[in-house]
Length: 157
Image (cartoon, rainbow, N blue to C red; front, side, top):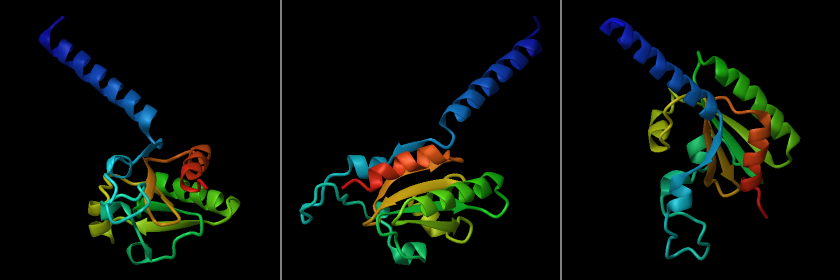
């Protein structure tokens, strides 16, 4: 084989590997390292409260009240097709689960918050507990079952 053919084979192999990786991770919820790995604040009696203020969101950040039990925050953009499907899924889940609120945030209009939370693509979904702490996040379009499972961690008694 010629050198050009080897280059084409290499590029195709790399593209296939990247596509398989994205298919496996797109829309999957993961924990947030800031919450799981953060040391507890010495002034706070609850050790699950992280010192890093960037993982706690309030009504001033969201422009909307937090849910009684949990809040689903979706970062989207105007021309994002998966964002529309994600919005429908989150609306359905928030309607089915009592005490859960869905908040949609335009990423282009809230760049400071996007940078603070390290949102790199849309849609990005954050699951907040009742206190506004980020407990789970997903980049890409999540499935409804995954959203409900992620909510389970946020509404623990």
